[in-house]
Amino acid sequence: MRFLTFLLLLAFIVLGVLFGALNPDLVSFDFGVTRLMLPKGAVLLAVLVLGWLLGGLTAWWGTRWRKTRDRHAAAHGIRKDRAGK
Image 1: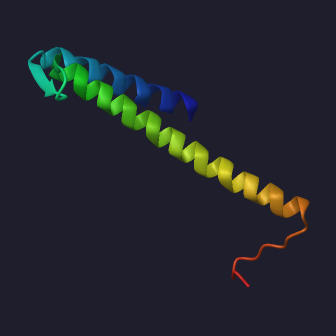
Image 2 (image 1 turned 90 degrees about the vertical axis):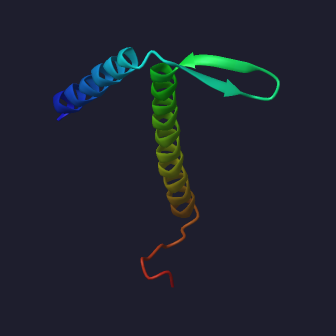
C-alpha cells in the first residue's frame, strides 16, 4: 500500500513539474503596494502545495483534538456513548 501511495505521489509530482514547464507565461499579482510577475506553472504548483499542507494540517488538528478529548474523558471517568445522552 505504501508503494502504491509513493507511486501516486511521484506521478503527481512529475505531472506538476511538467505542467509548470509547459506554462512558462508570467502572471501579474498586484498587492496594492507592490506588483509581482511570476510564472503561471510555479504559482499553480505553489497553490496546490499550500492547499495540500493546509489540508494535512487540518486533518492532523482534527485527529489530535479528538484524541485529546477522548484522553480527557478517560482521565475524568466520563462515559461517552453514541446517542449523546
